[in-house]
Length: 177
Image 1 (cartoon, rainbow, N blue to C red):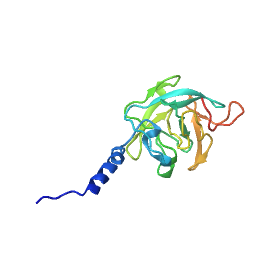
Image 2: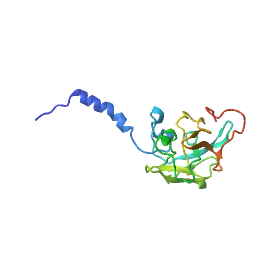
Image 3: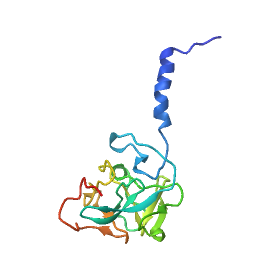
Image 4: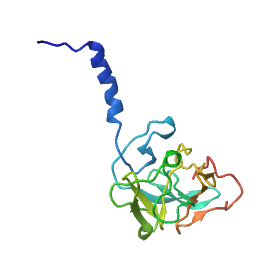
């Protein structure tokens, strides 16, 4: 018996292939998800944490692409308390392999912790690290000082502490380095 596949079925498979191919797990960048409806690139490599100077905030931690990294003051140890809607708004900085330090980041303060979903989250000085979905590009610090999901979110300094105050006058959002 010779069965023919209708042309529209072949077309549907061809249209779905890029969507299915884009599904994967984990990354070291904020590009690991489609938070906020924006399709983002996936990579499978070790995360790099480096420093950048942020207007009004001083020297802060960023990833290898210059995206701002935050800590969540509700986290009291290396295990993240941010899940569900929280992790959609504040994606975890994840890694495949040991995270790498650059700039004036202290390599000895970098570590990893397993998340409840099985991914490996980067920590610094015992704090799980996150991005903010509202930062569209490198240099933005739109999440600075936001109180969401039960506690404030702050950029993190090279000493491993939250930077909670401005060093100069001026806003912290939309800034460039």
